[in-house]
Image 1: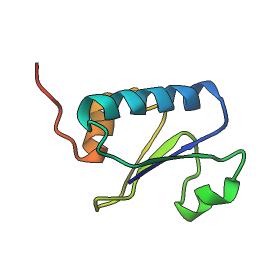
Image 2: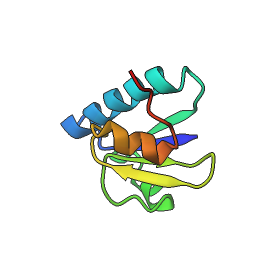
Image 3: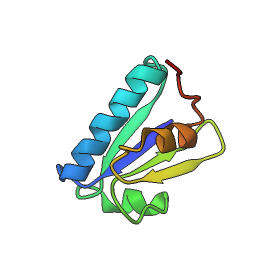
Length: 89
């Protein structure tokens, strides 16, 4: 289970959504659960996960929980946080 906190249609938020969806297509083969939370619509949801900036990806399960902030363009950092081994070649 992953939760991506974004701020509406801000450029970094849109980029984070696109980057995460590309990673999920390539590495997770539709075997994931993703919730996108717009903090402009529901700011208190971010507080429950201790999210102070957007965009931020929170991996809730499998444990351990991890967080990655930013537009998720650093694929290796996102993969590491998600516990995914990068495909070679």
